[in-house]
Image (tube, rainbow over all chains, first blue to last red; front, side, top):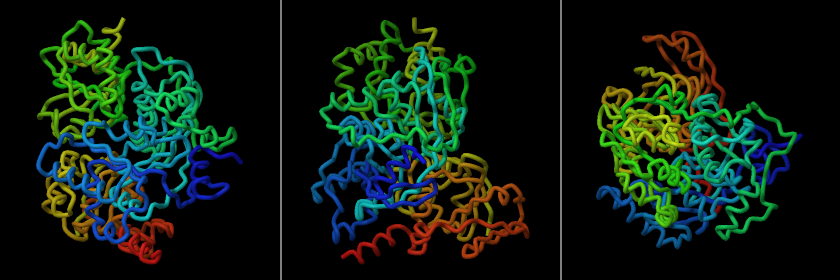
Length: 421
Length: 161
């Protein structure tokens, strides 16, 4: 009997020839991602770190991104503590403020590779399925334990197979596709499960695959995975990362799935996830005309070069409506530099946008663009939970970069087809 | 003992707002903000031994562990829900917080019902009716019996030495 992607990775990494859903295996992840929460994590295990040290100096990838630059003395003290920890234990993979959002860094620096297991104390760790990596979110306590002992248990998940047909028709974007999938399966539709994307995956760029894998956790998924193809291999080649085809893992043709569902990408239309759940799916026409006080383009979901390019294309020669404000949040320094070199940032600033440093920004409501009561934001981020952007009386609509850019022009939620020729 | 009853998809921002994630990490810092955007009465009135009843997908969203750590440290005896989100489930095991998945018990619960939990037998009694819940697999039980994951790992490291 064949195995799914998740079954194959977990079998290989646990020294089994075959595993089945529900089985519990012990694995040693290739990397452990932590970010600003590293301060709280090491705070739990100070004595043990002194006694045993870290299990591997190259296990952790630590990226300061959540509240950068520090918004308060307390944040600053956390960052300081992390830098001291990195220095003391000679950790190899540390990225200080300004490098970018942790998920983008793990991805663009080549830490995530096909067939690897990466666990991270951030729910969007599932993003690296874009490159065929088994990656999943864990809590801080588990991250602390991994730093010390390097191994943990994982339950083998059952898998949902999603087959994609056709091609996206711009301005429908990958964000509209994944919001449609989550709206169809539900916010818990993939809880505890792996999600595999099959079919015409070749029609999706790496940026698009990342956006989709990133949002897997919004339907509860443990893992979201794309097959490795020539697009993936070109992505690694361009970054000088060597990937052996032998490391690549993909599902067998006779793998057994819990559920199979097909989505025709050609039929995807611009949509939004209305407050306050990500599966509260609306066709954009049903939300059109809702006044927005803030528009956010960026984050780990939609802060890559093609997303900023889309925003610049929509806003070129236009102005952000005086009734709203537009925040641009690139996912990394390298993306920001490329976007500057290509003139996208200048176009956006000329239109009246505000540029934020590459990091998590206002997505989690800690700083840099929190909302006031009764305000509404249309955002390319991945969550619209009540209170997410700092205020429980505010509303968040999730949408694609094209939709948010079009909405910025009018100060209200706008069908991107009206601003794109 | 008080029962706190909530609905479906109670996410981590409702259980503990994201804006405090990097400034509040200890039980004392977490407590005043527990369920702040869901139920303003909770943090002030919750007492050791209380139980939470909820619908499906409890704890969905962020991987922040303040909800599990906070609810454990204020003495919540158990959370009974139709289903739990994966990362929250894992975080709760790692804190030693008892989660009971039983849709029937949640559906049949009425305000005022007497609730008794017998973890060792895998039984919960709600309004005089018994419901069973499965025991955890040995890997997870070992963590809970050690008093949480860090105690479990400390023990493992000691034996390795």
